[in-house]
Image 1 (tube, rainbow, N blue to C red):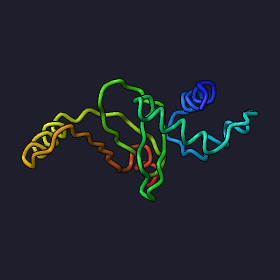
Image 2: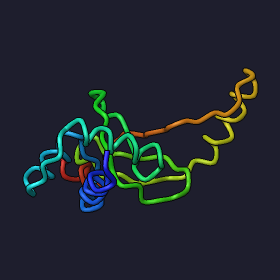
Image 3: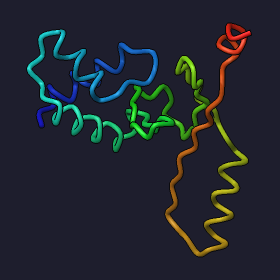
Image 4: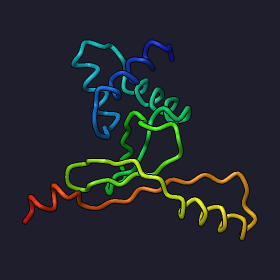
Amino acid sequence: MTTTRRNAVREALASCEGFRSAQDIYADLRADGSKIGLTTVYRALQALSDSGEVDVLRTAEGEAVYRACRSEEHHHHLVCRSCGHTIEVEGPAVEKWAEAIAAEHGFVNITHTVEVFGTCGDCSRAAT
């Protein structure tokens, strides 16, 4: 895959506020005249995820969605189920727990991902 195509996916994500599916990113790029293929979008997203440039999370339906990473530090996400608003949060207690539970079971070189889903204040107020 060319760097140009990866840059196109990177730029498409940078222009979005929330998380987007690969199909949404593909549709946006095609609407802007790009000849990029869906498989190339998936490959670019995987490469950007592997390099830490893109956050990936799984929706309640199990779909992977992507967003340009806003922080270079390890972080977790608080995600609104209604509108998708996402906040990057630190979790020192989670970090300590992950290290302790891994050590207790003899695991090394661990990684983890934590997403907390709920309803944001705006959506909660709008529902009442």
